[in-house]
Amino acid sequence: MILKFRYALLSFLILTMMMMAACTSDSNPPKAALMNAIAKTMDADSYEMSFTMNIHELDIGNAADKEVAGGLTAASLTSMLKDATIEANAVYQKEPMRTDLDLQITLPSLLDMKLNVPMIMTQDMLYVKLTNIPLLQLPEEMADQYVRIDLNELSQEQGGEKAMDLQKDQRMLQDSLKTLLDGFDEKTYFSTVKTADAELPQDLKVNQVISFSIKEDNYGQSVETLVNTVLPELLDILLANKDNLAAFNMDTAKLEQTKADWETNRDAMSDKLLNHLTLDTMNFTGAIRDDYLVYESGELAMQADDTISGGEMKLSFSFSGQYSKLDEAVIFKEELPADTVALDELTALLKAPATTE
Image (cartoon, rainbow, N blue to C red):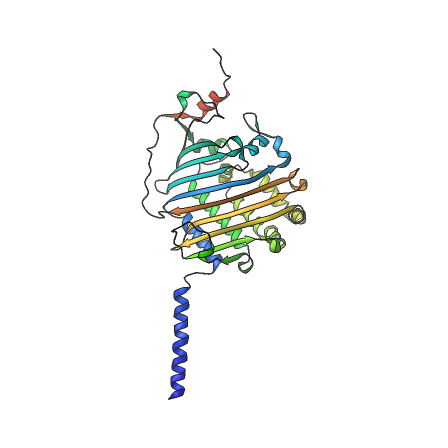
């Protein structure tokens, strides 16, 4: 009788422990949980998003002398962006496709100048509001007007064989991100973070927090994974979506040549990444609620010598973003603009010589 009672008590304790584990561990394996959450958020029919990026260091080496636009060199641009803060607030809806984005850039290098750029994007059109940006020196009568950019025409002008397909672009990005994360070993790179230690926004409730991190002690393994697995697969994905590459300013011919020469250049690529690039920090943290990615943050700090970039290059930035109203009804504050200026009209105006009275 006592023996039966002991077995019954032991069984009860084991069952209780299993139930407690099931109740207290509402998390999935970190790698799969993070990948699935990113995919579910990207597939959402609607959401609101807030995003902030802080650029801590930006030096692009010998490329600094190249002209970017309108006489502005890359060096001038990077100097302006040093210590810049980029903030974005967006409302997204899949059907009918529309994204309203308010972009604000704060430039400490220019006495904390703030550049505000509201945008509205539909399936076929991008509207950019011409706020009073001193760098553009726009006529007063054009202030607060919207520039109209036909995305189909723009894609074709940049070499796209077909009109833009935003859903196809999104699938390509999803496949690329999945390939990137899937190539890395779960135990080495992914971990579950305690909610209390994750530095989440106040009042944000989540079920699970996952961290992906490349560190000094696993950098050699990371290079091997990138060169042997991840990058070749990413090239395959990009080349399978040739019609979409123009929208991302990618040269198909160069990608095809890179793919063809990959085996020959593999060792040289590994050597450059191992011996001529220093990765100080690279991490990404994702917070998950109801299987959605609702918060993300990360940072990257790296530097390369002149073997890679033709001059010493440094890059350091951090970011964070939060998603809300996922798959819920969203409200757009602005109507689609009716009184607009075509992009070619604005281009002609900016190129016109200044007149003096």
